[in-house]
Length: 178
Image 1 (cartoon, rainbow, N blue to C red):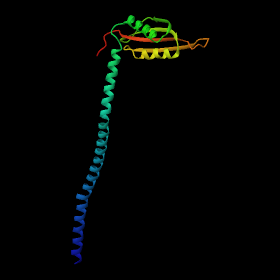
Image 2: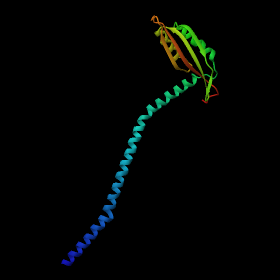
Image 3: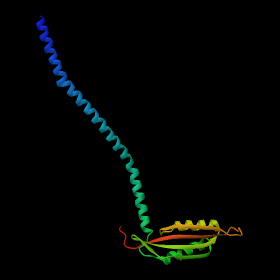
Image 4: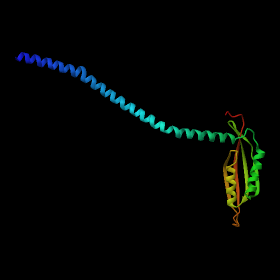
């Protein structure tokens, strides 16, 4: 009987070993692999969902950038058009009750496909009028970059200020794409 029991135990051990090494361990390894792949897929899905939530905001930003680019391009005329711009500056100074007006364009220069013209502006008036002038300047259809502002109070302290400004206007030196 001992021999039968040993044979049964050996057969049971072989069957158990066959099950452990033939089925359980490979399935366990595969389960771990699938679990890590599932976690990785979950992270990818989470990232995609986060990015999908950003799409409407990105579309809005793209629309705003396109609008800004269109405004930028429309603010840079195809020709120098210096005369109308100088007239506009003089009109803005008159509208804002600024006196002792002087508007002098400098020599134009090329920067890539853009032509730049520096314009020196001088006038005098009250601070509120000078600020209104700058607001008006900011609202022009033409792109204007103010590079220097110098405001000096008069010696008699009457509230009259003298303003010296250097602005730069742009024009398309060559046909811009778009």
